[in-house]
Length: 355
Image: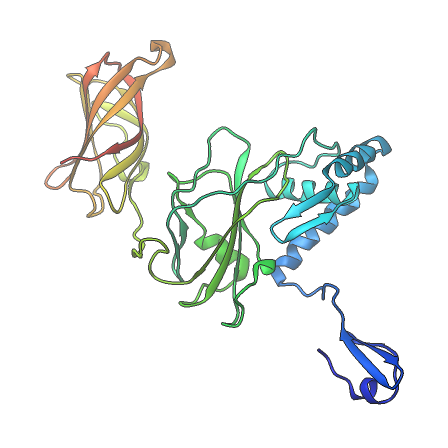
């Protein structure tokens, strides 16, 4: 509370700063303002500017469109966020929905949606919060849907900040994951300017949101101290070993590799990959193409995978023996061991590795 001597001792009634004085009989009662102080972090200020820009657009829509937003707000009754519920007007609902649509990469909509699909809780697997890495694993996001994953974060500025959920701001809206992994290291630095410090308390809100609707309601809330080790299993972060187009010789006398995105996990021997090939002159029901040298995580790795042909061949199914050589031999070999072999095919998915 802000104490001003002139208020407390000079028979003053009224307000000064955030303090109100009431003179009752011989006593003066002081009270501080309970209204929101309007204090905000720089990141929250940027978001509120977006709300302001959208708010001005409300005056440009037709009266019929405004009535649609008013009717939707009346049916909704209250607007719920992770910080509580509040009654909402058509104007405020218009601003909230369109602001989050914009954040999700969707265009402005003047018409109220037919229904509001609220955001949902989302379970994430292990995660790392360190100065070098801010990474979330096992983030489930269905491909082909309107869903995106919204991340909000705030790093406490002192050990005394033990509950600062109202200070979080949007770090990223994720439209797709990297085989279930989301790396927010770069996004966090762009947002806040400084990396996390070991021992710093971090507040995280994450939810799955329908990008067409933009209705943020339910959050999963995660709190943790920044550490070099992961939250659940206390592991040091190691990037997954990868093979991309820049690491191979895509065209050989046998085959043209149109695309390759091959990764192996850092713990159990599992691969998630996508390989698309067109055989040019292979002598058998298999092919091989060289690479330029891979990381030490690769040596001799083998997986048995399903593959399929092109639409012209009605997606004929095959079973492929996929081998990665990274020793005295540096090549990637694929051989059909079952099904109907086609010269153009793709293989993808998650499989166990053997060697």
